Structures are given as C-alpha cells and as structure tokens.
Length: 309
Image (cartoon, rainbow, N blue to C red):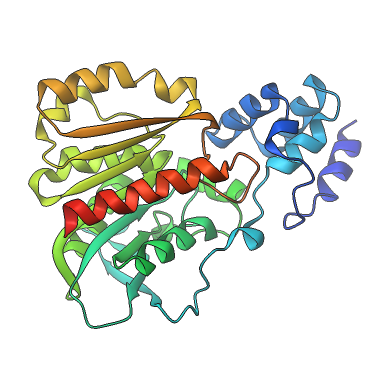
C-alpha cells in the first residue's frame, strides 16, 4: 500500500492546471486541506485521508495543491513597478538579519508603505505577487521572508511550512516587527505604514497592530487569528478585518476580539464573504473565490488609500 501511495504522489504535477472547481470538491476534503495547511498532517497523509473520505477524493486533494505559475497577475517586469530583494538588520530575531521582497511604484516617492505578511510557509510566489499588486496601486510594499535567516523559502509550501514550524515563534514575530520598522523608515517611505497578511500573516497583522501602536496606521488581516485581547488597548490603527464564511476555527475568535476592540474604542470594519473558504484570496488553488477576492482587495486598497494618504 505504501508503494502505491508513493507512486500516486510521484504522478502529481505541481504546475498542472487544477482539474476541479471549488464547487466540485467535497467539504470534507476542504476541512482536511485546512488541517494540512496548518500543520496537522503531512502531504502524504492529507492525500491518503482525502482519498478515503470521498469518491474521487485524491483528485480533489490534488486540485487543492497550489499552482503558482498560473496564479501570477503582475509580472516582475511590469513597467509600473521596480522589484528587488533587500537585506536589513533584525536585532532579536531569528538570526539578526532579514531578507524581503521590496516593490516600489515607478517614480521618486515618497510613497505610503504596505507590509505584506506571508502565510505559515514563507515568502512564496503568491505573496510576492500580492506585493506587486500593492505597488501598482501606489504603495511601497515589502514582503518579508520569515524563513530567510534559515535559507529562505525552499521552493515549495510543504517544506516551507515544516521549516517555519521549527522556528522560535517569538523571534519570528520580532523579525516581522523589525521588517515593519525598516519599511516605515525607508528613504522612499512617506512615514505612513499599513500592514496586511493572510492566515498566519493575518494573525501577525493583528499582532503588529498591538505591538507597534501609533507607529502603524492601518491594518487589514485576512482570516487571521485575533490579537490577544489583553493587548488590544495598545492598538491605535484602524482595522479592516476580512473573514471567510466557512472558517470555523478562525471565526470563533471574532466575538471576543470584537468586544475588546469596542472596549478599547479601536475603529474597525469587519466583512464575512459568503460561500468562501479559508484562503479565498489565494488564487493558486480552487479555494480561491474570484468575486470575493476582488471585492476584498478593492476594499483593502481603498482602506489603505484612506488611512495612509
């Protein structure tokens, strides 16, 4: 049986177009994928369990694996932007140094800034694309790679997730704090700082709002864990909180978080997108929900333009 599964895994073409749409994937397979994405099982177990719960479950599971080549929306050669990798100090972080993907609009600036925080697997091509999207809208964007002190994003999400889980999480968060401060103080920065992130990055966006206080001017967490309620009074930036409808683990945190935001008089908006799964903004898998992703991103850009101008 193990040999059969190894052969099945070897036939998966990571960049092949997904064969199934979101509506054709069994809800139980989505739930397994969510557990897999958050480190609850490895790829082999995910595929095996998906095959066991539904007819055609293996194909459904394969369709959910990311296809980054098809997901690019802004080329790194786009004439509206200039993109490069930068290194900067990160005292107290994983190694004392960090590397990130810096994307600026064409022109001399200064520009309002947006930190783009990755999921729980390092700086993959989807997050780089999001940084480019932000730059085309006039923001100086930095997407830090939390894995850079240990070699960087390894080229696939499985290894990236495993590698990120091995890091000291406190030091990793310090690396994100230092990344935000580096971006805010950049010579091309207007001094206005916004932060957005997805999943782990959404939780980090909430964390940074509480940690940076008045040094952060707007935050847009996508389906991320809430900030610790005791830290909420430290939040001084307005928040635009984006949730998927079918995301029980994350959404269960909202009532307590909302109560703390209200008590601390933190300005916020919250939107739940009907019919969506956790990760609906990520256009590299069938969890992507195009209409909701576009609406959420339009709201994100409008929010940043309002508060970072």
